[in-house]
Length: 420
Image 1 (cartoon, rainbow, N blue to C red):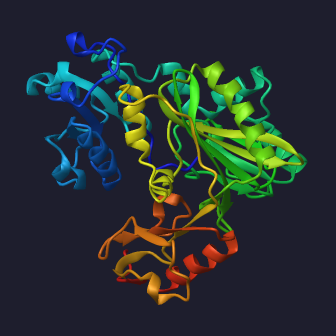
Image 2 (cartoon, rainbow, N blue to C red; image 1 turned 180 degrees about the horizontal axis):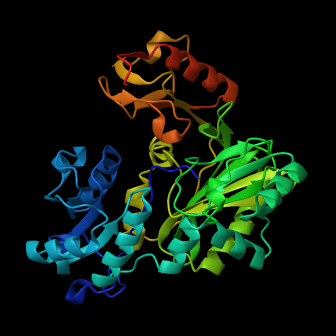
């Protein structure tokens, strides 16, 4: 599951005399209440804006004293997001500990998500359970759960015996090599179609497993669950970059049969995991009319929030409104044909010039481009989504059209000064 972002948001259940009779909050009684956000990268800025628009103060926590989001916050704590004990002590020392009603852990780092779980417990606000985090970060645990409730996953093997490993590869013809736990997206994941040059080092401690390759018709269900019900969902068809496992981009799925089947399976998993009051994402492969669930995360997939922003949906604000009962919950389903294509660096080095859409032959109506990196930033094509320079979003187009435009943009990125 590629996701530079994961999100945990927890609303406090205790509002004292400030609660209305129906349990909802108002802008007036949100004064002097706080949201804390683990991490201060640029991806946190939309979260900060959404919280502050609702009258909340926002505290950013990051080990980088010069992080971008620092300048948008009301309080900055220069602490590692992994260090939950120090974070709790500093929140108490700052005098805001008892006024925190929302915690965001918008991160793809496993340690930070576990840290968020600990902080939530200490602050007496709902958060992720250890079992839920285990499903998100241990692929074998997720596969086992799917098997228990009748959800298909590709056949796999974990073995220290190199002969058994080679036999599995020979039998399946093509397999996917995955870390059992802790990996983000396609990082450390690759396809093997021959046992001849297999490096068995990873199998000495069973830290990796092999999974049958069942095709690349890949879909993603991203959504929001509140009160144990899906109140927001978006299903996309994902395209993989040729020669890698990196996602090239995605298009909103318009096939009702596929969408309904995926949601039906996902609801079984959500119930089994006791998933609640969080964003989530599932990756699914469709092969021979069968749906194989291959990954789960407590996150929206890479750049889905920007994808939704294009449609004027403030997904973070939506969650805050629902969790704090600022607005009645209304289900939302995106059915507009929107596409996003990623722009990757073509070599390792320093970005000297970023292109403009005007540099292409594209129809610029309803099209936007956003960059994750700036000029003079380092870049490197490692074959993972984290490497991308930016993305293009547009509506009412076929994948091949937006892919062509993205390819044109990549060629116009000027990268110099190779990094040794």
